[in-house]
Image (tube, rainbow, N blue to C red; front, side):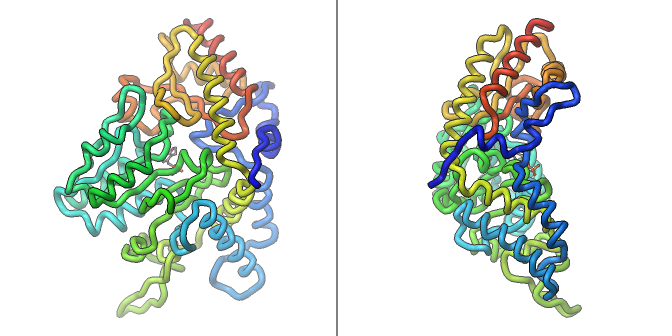
Length: 408
Ligand code: PMP
């Protein structure tokens, strides 16, 4: 019995009702960059340092056991949240970027041969481009790019056309951070598997907005960040199928990732610890666990419906503004709107909106190839989350109308 009451959800995020220095009310529409935190997450972090602070896995004393319970308890919640098969498949990372680099260096690097292909799409975040370029450089493999359509979509046909018998890995976003496009990930995973490739989904922009089931997706690796899911920065998840993770060498060497160490040879700890060298972000895990616990009662399908309604309201309002052009209009897109305005720099849009408390993002959104594809140096981007409401949309539209009056 999952529920979602947008007004109650919003009330759980203290920062959203705090007046800004400008004396105006915050309309936070930069959720693709990072999300705000509910009271439960803030308190879990505070609670950890007040009542549980100790190192994990290493001592038998009471606090260490408490810290370990919070750290591992959060992992259990994450296993359940994405429907992984077991704890072995859920590796803590620093975030999405770290997870992709781990797969590039530990899965791809030992396996890739010169001429092998790594397939990505044109709309990827730099975090899902650069690690592959680095491993291509190291191995002689090639990065192949699936082109994006004029409406910002990635079609299954375009993806299939770039698959070949040399494709070793296909890595693609679940949802585009720059345009909001939702990719046909189920079909892409199946097609990549048919071609004999291993798959990685960058789920950074998906997990807070829709239910994600890694077994239903049948994807090999799925990565995301805590901070885009109402949790803290500095922690994220790499999900990987156990057989794949098991066959991979460790990422970094150090404490916690070993079984035994000697100068004759060192052996690795079992999964997932093999990939978690050093004292981890324990407070982050505890707070991430609180975010997941908070979301356990929330109907993410209802969240998607709510965000879709906000998207429609915002799109309608923006379409009525002279000289404003939305980039990315793929059917079924998520509630992220990239746009440009004739004669106005994206940066000026952001600055003017900020004066009225409307927080949006301007720039290339870590997707420079995509900006090049659409022939713009930058866009302004409004991105919605579950706690946004009509008042946020209306503040955005009002702000854009005054941008248009001043510059238009
Ligand atoms: N991929 C996508 C699609 C993203 O939106 C982001 C964050 N903007 C990242 C990767 C990188 O995430 P992080 O900075 O948390 O590692």
